[in-house]
Image (cartoon, rainbow, N blue to C red; front, side):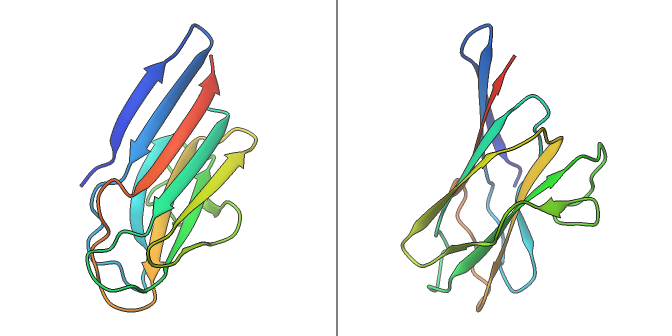
Length: 134
């Protein structure tokens, strides 16, 4: 399922974008893309919040936030992507918030793995909030 996006222009000089994941089917030890490629070229800041939201089991989720300067970056987490910061771990019944204030990025995405089982990750539990000046 594709990301959902809500772009808001607050004034002539500020805009925000909220992106939520679609359902990620069968998390496993292999990386699953939770947030597909976001065009981040006109945003200065990004906050990522991930709520532990699997339909079965309690295994810890490991998330990675990725950035790219390539126009055609390909699959999130692939060769044209670089991990931003450390792994984000989300234990059962918790959430994590990662803030990125960095130099410009062209693309942003999120991948997830889980240590055991193959649960589905619930839609809307991974959110990316972008803020930028115009």
